[in-house]
Length: 184
Ligand code: SAM
Image (cartoon, rainbow, N blue to C red; front, side, top):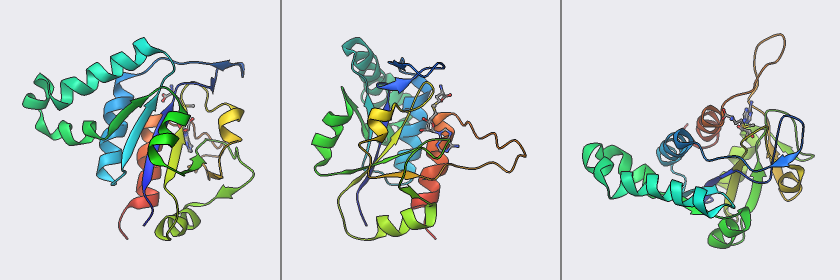
């Protein structure tokens, strides 16, 4: 089984007009994605932000739940928050992981090599380098991240006639971890 990690990117991501921007860290993303990542056995949940003050904020939240009063009040949060790593960029996460493959996620078919979930599960069960699942914020990952990916995961689809499938990143991460890593 390959090592699997996730990264939440705050830059470079797109805004509503398709411009490349930097988004702010959302407290709920840290908790909810860390808990999902821990539940499904991911090795790391990286939160990448280029602005030092935003990284400090994430580190303060982490500290509250790993060594601060939050850890004493709700000890169940401690282990998930311990797999959180706050980094300044995707490259910093790749450096920590070694020779990892990037797999991007999107609500649209945003990569020429699209993996459906059964194929992705099979790839994870083989030996190979670690896989870094990359999630976006704002209006999604900028093309410069997608261009570095070895694959894109198929979108989580909707049964609706209009195909609406724009999930919060927290919901998308939980569904994708389950599809790739839940025991069968
Ligand atoms: N502010 C937003 C929020 O509420 O979380 C952030 C939206 S951000 C574009 C959502 C990210 O979640 C995408 O970049 C992608 O990583 C993932 N995502 C959302 N919907 C998805 C879907 N249907 N299939 C796969 N990934 C999805």
